[in-house]
Structure formats: C-alpha cells, structure tokens
Length: 299
Image (cartoon, rainbow, N blue to C red):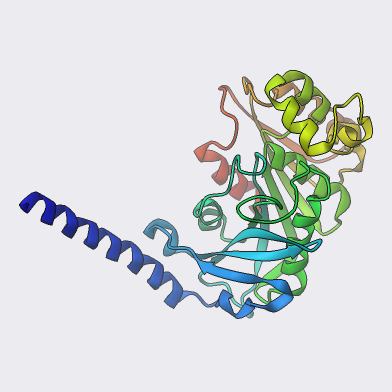
C-alpha cells in the first residue's frame, strides 16, 4: 500500500509540474492564439502542454482550418517573444507519410520552433487526424499548405511573410518542391530525405505501389502526368529559390540517387543548392539537422 501511495504521489507531482510548465508558457506568451477562434474558419483551438525544455521558449496550439471546404488539422508553435510589434519569420513544416502514417506529434513543431526562433506551422493534410477530405499525396492537398501561407500572410498579425521558408521530410519534401514551384511567397526551402522522382519511388518500393495508386488514381504508366507533376526532377528548372537538401547515403525508403540527380539538375541550372549527406540509413532528420537548418536560415 505504501508503494502504491508513493507512486500516486509521484505521478501527481509530475503531472502538476508538467502542467505548470505549460501554464508558465501561456502566461509569458505575448500572442494569445485563442483570439483567432472563428477567424477565417479557424476553430477548435487547443493549447498543447509542452515539456519544460520547449515551454520556456514557445507556446504551441493545435487547430482546425478550412481548405477547399474541408476541415484540416494543423499545429502552430510561436516564440514567446513574438507579438504584433515583434513579428517573427515563418517556417512551414511538411510532414512525411500519408493519412494516419507519419502524423505530427504534439511536440514536432515546438522542437523546431525552440531551435530556430521562428513561427513554425504545419498541416496534418486533409483526410487525416479526424480531418475531412482525401489525401491525394501531392494532389489537391497541396492547397492545404497554400492556405497556411495565406493565414500567415493575411490573418495572423504576429507573422512576417518576408523570408517565408518551407521544410519537408520524405513525402513532405516532395510537397515542398511543389510549393516552391507554384507559390512565389516561398523564399527558401529545405528538403530532407525528399521524394523528387515519384515514378522511381513507385518502381523502387513495391510496398508503396497500392498506396500510391489509391491516392493518385493509378500507376505511373496509367497516369504519367500525375507522377511527373509530383516529381521535381521533371521540372527542376522551375525551382528558383535557394535549396538545402539533406539525405542519407543508404536511405532504403527514398534512394539517395534521387537527391544526387536533382542536385545535378540544380547545379546545371545555376541554382544555389547545398547537399548535406549522412553516411547511414536514416530516413528523416538527424538531431543535428535542426541546428544545420538554423544556421542555413541565418546566412
């Protein structure tokens, strides 16, 4: 019984400490994001309780927004010193995966925000995390990301649209290239373990083929233009913003050769592009990559 009471007491102390960290962040934050409830179809705002290492630097919220009439879930993390008088630059973070695979956690945007001191915003994409609509793996769901840029530009009074940066991992890297091609507000992009040749990804990954056919509507042979539209290697000359690429040499999910081929195209076009290589199999970010991104954004 004594052990049980001690365990309960320890749990209560931990819970109160954790909650206290979040409350401190709320009290110290200059931006009250709840003020945007009902503005531009923003709804269901929830504050995220963050670990102390993040809450002392930023506040985070999960919310619902409207894109093409669908309800889409998103996260935003805001530096504590950010305000309408002290606006911060933004970074749009594009997750990998699809639908329920690779969903953002409550701390993903906070981790980046705490390191780079920018407002970090991210979408779960339509059709995921109780959102409505269908994830088309780079189809109309690209509008879910454009809508977040719209909000940063015209709705949030604490964001500075200048030097708007976009970073993405895996499928999110693919969508980052697509955004850079289609939206002139994007100033710089970061692509980590990024898909840049979706036809090659389809051929390399037998386990992905049914998912891609279901999301896109068919195979590369049946719908070549759909796969080309999602493949930066097919329109590399249309990317004009500086690029930071990060890719592991032995990545088994997205071949390193995709990064090499796209980098060669960027070099041929005279685009400012830096390729950071890791000698391992990691698919996604390494711990040190956020610092690398921070330093690159500061250049």
